[in-house]
Amino acid sequence: MKRPAPKHRPSPRGSEPRTAPRVAPRVAPRVAEVTVGEVGARGDGIASFEDAKLFVPLTVPGDRVRVAVKDAANAKGDGLRADLLEILEPGPGRAAPPCSHFGTCGGCTLQHMEDAAYAAWKVGLVQGALARVGLGDAVLEPLSRTPPAARRRARFAALKRGRRVWLGFNERMSHRLTDLAECPVLRPNLFALVEPLRGLLLSVLPDGGGCDVIATDLEGGIDLVLVGPRSLDRAARERLVAFGEAEGVARISWQADERQPDGRGTPEPIAHRRPLAVSFAGLPVTPPPGAFLQASAEGEAALVAAVLANIGEPKRVADLFAGLGTFAVPLARKAAVHAVEGDAPALAALTKAAGTLRLTTERRDLFENPLTAKELARFDAVVFDPPRAGAAAQAQALAGSKVPRVVAVSCNPATFARDARTLVDGGYALSRVYPVDQFLWSAHVEVVGVFTR
Image (cartoon, rainbow, N blue to C red; front, side):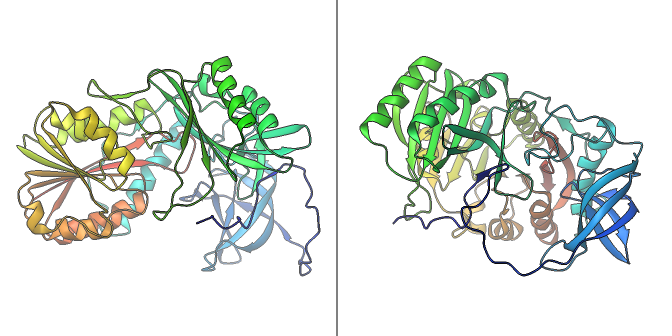
């Protein structure tokens, strides 16, 4: 089945639409002067305006600013949005951003916040989410932090117009592209591919065409997956092969933007020059093209350390949403592990690498078919690490089980808090919470929670 054309195609900054759409007349925004009191969960400063919350991007607490008040912040009517016009008086927590793209590029939200205030805000995201479900008294460990230039995986957007290719990230709340000239978040060898990729895409994309580029820095080299709207002809394939050889790319694949019954396309390797791996507890696993893994090695290490430190001494562990084995492999060094994952290529990679480890695997959609309390009864501990949507159904099943120890890993404090509430209502105690900041200068934070009964 061919994927429907997207409603919006990324456009380079400054480009104009080919036809001007007819729109209703806009009311001129109101100009106001306000003082920012706090930073919200998405990284915008929050001020008060006419008894409503006013969300102002690129501000910090204490900033006195002139803004253009616009429309409702969201469909629920929870406050108003504003554009920042001028900083009249900076707050004490303001800092100089390290990147020239900051303020335009949507990749980072909080480079303008002083470091200690930024770290406190990240911890506050977790505290606030837990407080909203009545778990505000949970013990939080100090924030683990990933340094700059550590991100090993990124997804760029690209667009060709004439004899130029824009390559970078979308602007904030926009489908326009910021054409990257620098990025202090990425590993240097990832960013070093940006300019050569422009040259490649200039020869591969049609005029007006776009694609996404998923770049991952692995053991053995860089893995590239280009996601485009069509299949490649022979000449384009040859250009990809030549690019891989010239730039030393270990593997390069093309994914035609056509959806399979499971909702995702299948990358087709075009050139595979060297073996690739990601190692967990010393075991190399060969990931399929574009496979998910933690955004940084440092962040992954912090998450794994928190899990291992709190899993106890179990004989049997279930690792749910196991992926490539980030937690399953180190856990299998100390216990028998049953790894459950819905993604077939990832699970196949883990199964192939497991060797003599005490590790069994099972393919299963845990959203539609969570492990039941009866199935969970044979485990002394459970680890689960779902996507951002959380694991509502699996948490409900765990709440009805007698598993003595559960360690939950999450990339979304809101759904973590929801699932934590479910476990606590089922008789668990939330004994410890570990916040991990591996998405530097963003509004995202990882969480590890320890539950016992």
